[in-house]
Length: 105
Image (cartoon, rainbow, N blue to C red; front, top):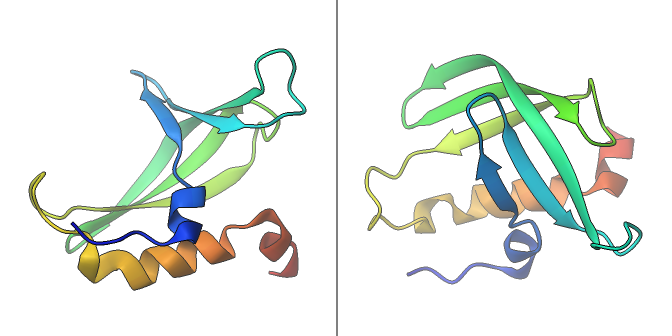
């Protein structure tokens, strides 16, 4: 298995896929007593191309309600496939997904 860099590890999320939305849990010490923040996102549109799908999602639960985001899903074919070809792209996405970077764009 390919070694995953620290920026990618920092952006791994605990995720729960429900029938009508995807829920992510973030570590956030400001949230008491659990230390976890919960966000729910609902898919609004899907664009397909090659081995990837890009979803437009709207936040329906949590501090960013009504915000939109793009989610890129990369299919490697099967569970034993390697993510190695996608590591440079994942690293760039992780580095530019930082809230401080979003302010610049």
